[in-house]
Image 1: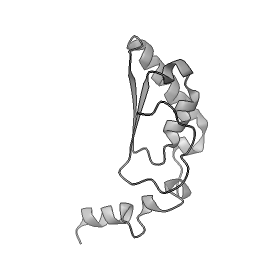
Image 2: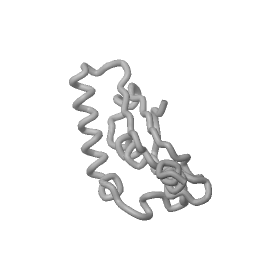
Image 3: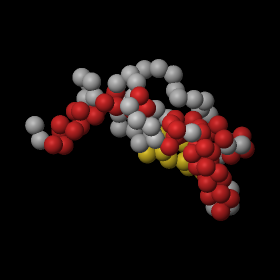
Amino acid sequence: MRWAPATERALYGPDGGFYRRPEGPAGHFRTSVHASPLFARAVARLLLEVDAALGRPEELAFVDVGAGRGELVAGVLAELPEVVGERLRVYAVELADRPPGPPAGPTRAIA
C-alpha cells in the first residue's frame, strides 16, 4: 500500500482510524484549545477586533479548519456577546466524521 492511502486509513479508516476512536485526539495529546479556555477567549477577542475593523458587517464568518470535535468553536461562541452571535456564521471543517455523542459545548448561530 502506498503512503497516502496508508496514512488516510490509519487516521480516518472505519476499522479504527485514529480520529474516529471514541476518545478522540484529545485522549492522546493536547492542543492550546484543550489546555486552557484562554486560547478560545483570545480568538474571540481577535474576532471582535476583525468585526470592528470590517465595520461590523451584516454577516461575519468564523471558519475553524481541522475543527475536530468543535472544542474551539464552542469556546469562542461562549465568549462572544449575543449581538455578534446574531450576525455570526460558523463553519467547522473536519475531514473525519464526528463520533456519536454530544457536542463539545454550547452551540448557537451555526450555519
